[in-house]
Length: 464
Image (cartoon, rainbow, N blue to C red):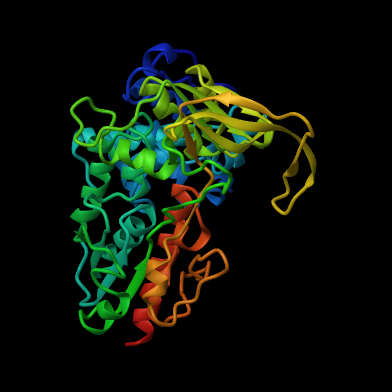
């Protein structure tokens, strides 16, 4: 293999024509030789800007240098100092806008493939049985964590390392949050990758109780007043789907992306032997342009549909990762850009038969900084489809806030919490991730969980 240079070492993937018909992971990962060669491209900067771009502050040069020296355990230990979910982050984090965006190598060539190296390190550790350090001396304090997604797992893991007795309460029957119900198998395998990362957190002493709906099964006030938890972290995510409120949205065959992906990922509807099969239409329209829209579209494709993504802005404004858009196109998914739905059309039995759309053009920038899409008069047309999946974003379920006295929320029903330490308006209650920001990325949720763990530790110590 050639010496390292300006271009990153390419990584193997399933052929598009093959992967479009299965749910196996698209990216096949580096071999040892490829990983060591790519690691050798790292300049080991004295002022590593890449670390500044990582929401959980992984010592990126440190783990890459260990990898370069084929010290695989050392590389994993270095990552584990900061991250509880390296095999997940190596697969789904938007490194291209974070750590890799700041890599010095990227100034005159390709940035070091930090994400793929993190994935290789974590996968190798799992295959060889290498575990994170679990020597945590108990400190006698009990903490409750609500939600077992990336924010909750990170917060719980960090607190456990500090000696806290941590219990995670999960509403669903399986742990993992969005990692389990939201992200498809072809991007993030559940039985291997997600399950192993959760087991590593449990190995730190963290307990996970499933089928506990906070606000119904038990309230936060009861956890603190009756069950002896001295602080609570809310990492319940944002699972309440948004809709367009257009005519026909109640037709049979209209799904939220949340429901559609949960049925496929958590309930395994993609399997022939599934107990909860899902509608498999011939044509599917997915409304939205984020990563969730790409996940829903690529899932529908694998279930046998002809799929079209409908997005009201241009490709330059697509919020999804470039890699996900590229993969969707390779697999044959169509894009109707600068297009907005205005009505879902039904047949006599109230099934979806088409979606009425209008062409858009970009006007002046809106509050998000992106140019506002404006309808083009007289450009209406019908897009034939048998199902519509709405992937327009999500907001937090209001149940927790509505059943917790003294917990402030904003106009979007998100919990108000300090960005610095996660402290909410209620003493001893902290929050972070999508429950605070609305739908965002896995790594940002992890960063919030890490900040809250530090805040909780400082809060407990201040009371002693």
